[in-house]
Every structure is written in structure tokens, then in C-alpha cells.
Amino acid sequence: MRRLLVIAASVFIGISAGPGSAGQPAPAQSVQGWEAVGRLNIGGRAMCTASLIAPDLVLTAAHCMYDIRNGRAVNPRSIKFEAGLNGRRAKASRQVVKAVVHPGYRHGRTGQFQTGTDIAVLRLDSPISANVIRPLVLAAAPERGMRVDVMSYSHRNATSPRLQSACQVIAARQSSLITTCRVDFGASGSPVLQKRPGRAPQLVSVISSKARMGGRGVSLAAPLGDALQALMRQAG
Image 1 (tube, one colour):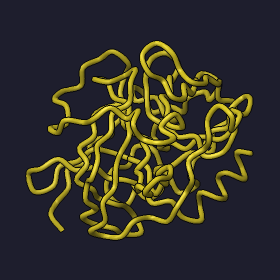
Image 2 (tube, helix red, strand yellow):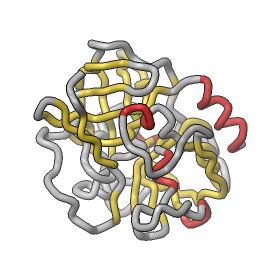
Image 3 (cartoon, helix red, strand yellow):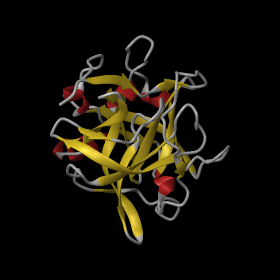
Image 4 (tube, helix red, strand yellow):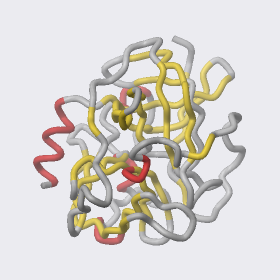
């Protein structure tokens, strides 16, 4: 495999972090169940993307739980999940009260093998009713060659999600997925989705970082394995 240059995709709110992705992402509102994806407002200073996976649980990247300035763990109660944020209004907004990070994650390490543990589950202060937002359905990681979408907030689209559609999975390993989706800063924790005709898409992975491989932009994502179920039990 060609050498990867990996760049974390979390961001300080309001700070330009260099060139954006090369594609032209489409609005996400046409995707059934898009409101389950939301922005994490981390202490009013940083942002990531996250997905509702149970009425009171959201899934994001583990490195979003650490301050990018000093590497210290963030107080979970300083985080707000803004589900379905579109403009100035969110479909639902909740404070985070607990964060459970994958036990194998070690903050500060980079590279493909760290990607496989870059997931965290957050518990909300109160459930979001299914009458308001239905959680995304979880599914197994896609295989090489399959098509996926990524829905994310970013520093360029901090108040409205964008959809990178029909990306190709170019590598599928136990430690990480590599896709042709080109994400921007702020997309850490974004859901990697597989479409189902006439139904809401399934969540199959979580964006960990942006990267370059062979001179082109790609994204690295963490597969969702048995560890996710354990994190959900601990968070609940």
C-alpha cells in the first residue's frame, strides 16, 4: 500500500485550517434520517461530527474527546450534541454527561493502526424521542470496492451538513477503512453510510482523519466491531 500522510480532522471553531476537500459535496437534507447526524460543540472552542445510535447515545471519534491544543481529556459535560443542525436551529439539542473511549485508543499516536480504535460513545443528559429523530441503524463494515457516503459538518459548513456520495472503499482492513471521500476539518466522527433503496442508510464506520495517498485526498475510518457494543453498554 502506498504511504499515507494522516491529518486529524477535528478543528477549532471559526479557525480556517487550510484548503478544503476537492469535491463538491451536496446538501444532506435529501437523505432519509439525516437528522440523526449532528455537530458536537466542544466547550465552545472546537467541533466534531457525531451520530445518534440510540435514544441517549451518540457515536464519534475518540480523538474528539481530547483538547487539540494540549492533549488533555475534555470534560464531557462541556460538550453539546446538536442533532440535525441546519442553519441556526437543531432538530434536538442535548448536553453530554458521559464519554466512553475505546480502551485501545492512545491519544497522540497517529497512523493507520490507531484508526481502528478511534471511536467513542457519548451518553446524553436525556433521550431524544424516536418521534423526533430515529437513531441510525448500525451495520457491518463494507468490503473493498463498495460504495459509501459520508455526511459531515466542517469548518466550512459548520452549521449545515454536507454529503460526499458514491465514494469507493479502496481498502478494508481490521484496523481501518480507506475511502475516496475527501473530508474537511471538523468531519472527525462523521458517519460512513451505506444506502438502502427506499430506507434510511446504515452506519458502517466513523471518520477518523483525512489523509493523502498517492497524491490524492482520501479519508480513514474506524470499522465498527464488537468493541462498539461494549462501549454502548458502558456508556449506558
